[in-house]
Length: 352
Picture 1 (tube, rainbow, N blue to C red):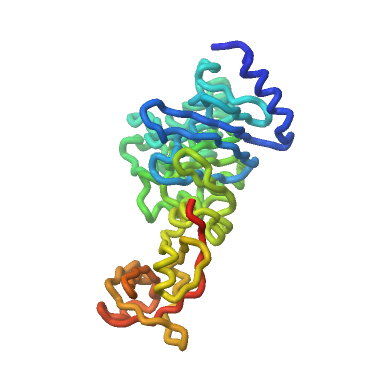
Picture 2: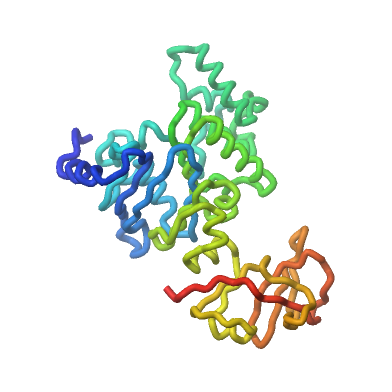
């Protein structure tokens, strides 16, 4: 363990003069590279995170999401750049005997639970025995908050993935951290339970004032839960902003494809469909495509349809160009039939 920061600390103090006094978590030109892979890690990341917000870090597999989370927590030290928490440097494992910031807690994908101990013991063990009454009251308070108090006497090994996730969160927040970091919190949760868990995370952030930073490979998690989304690609921040802003007005084709699962067409393909884009690439969201007969509609052939519950997704083709559209009037078109299509709304992107 090192005392002080020597040259690194001097550099931090100089850069800190330029940082806002209001900053909660600040990253300035942070890079971390793994020698085994050219694109692994993060590169030149500069961003700030506000207090009390829910931040979702999203990106494809290998984009550097988990690396960035570990850097913020202090489990990794950056090769270059500086990371601060309330204008104080976050120490990495080379500067702190027990890695991890004292004001933060992290919930990992494996939950790090004592699987043979009971739920109550897993939660209560995070508090010291100096005040047993407070320890018991606090443990029950947290378990009730996360709706796992009825499981108090069950062994963790007998719980479902979603229940174990709640126990892991309870262990993390019982010590009242200012920041909760979560690595793929929904990866082991069944789809019906995701909505409940998202609601619980939003509630604990709002009610307890905890800043939540989560990593997810599923963009729906960010869109439905976060106050702000940070989009990573090959270790670099592509763009960041509110879910509505990034979904409706993405600046990068990578963001549009990641968040909206949209139709991506070249300028030539778009022109075949009667569109007149200026840029070389366009994006059309399936829900933007209208299916109705008008003087301006064009006939597409229905290649296939996919039932999605309250709607069906249609795979349509015209002049060798295929697009996907949403049809809420399920079963109204048969395979091979002509479907009227109106294409008016799209986003243009210049090639990167």
